[in-house]
Length: 253
Image 1 (cartoon, rainbow, N blue to C red):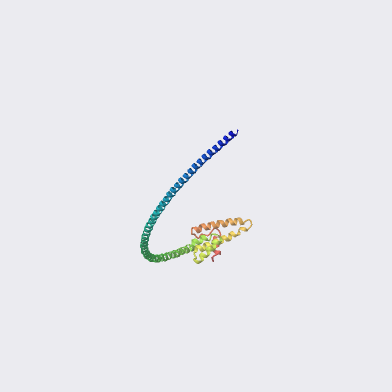
Image 2 (tube, rainbow, N blue to C red):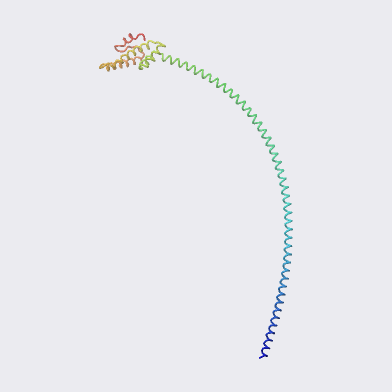
């Protein structure tokens, strides 16, 4: 029994030593792997850093070259733009001067033409005014002469005995007009019908007499018609029954 226990302890110890040795070996191998991985990572990082540095340097070089190129192009563009601007300014100045000269010349020509047109218009206006004045005077003279002739004809016509005789039949107002026309140019025919119509109008005023007033009105109308017909014919013919009496009674008319 003690021997078995002893053997067991030895086996346990042996196994423990083997396990410890195996663990140490694994630990050393793992440490070596870690160290190797770290060295590899360090090497990779160094190479990566080198590549990055080279890339950054390349970018700097390219940026510098791009900057120089852009600066060169900007200078060329600025120079070209300035040259074009100067040329445009010079051309614009030249064009403006030419336009100014042309405008000045055109203005002077327009001014001269306007002056000529104004003088010509004034001359034509004066001629037209003189012609219009002459025509107006002739027209006025003709119209005045025509008016005078018309007035003379009207006066002659209205003062005509036949005209006075006819107007005297147009109620009391017509008789009054005929009276004044005949007074200005008294004629035998006008005076005859003034007396006759006056008598007829007086007879017509008796219409208000009872019973016979109606017959008197008819009689007066018949006398008026007969007298008007004779006046239109220019005849000094007394009306029926009372015509001669009218001429006798109103001889002063």
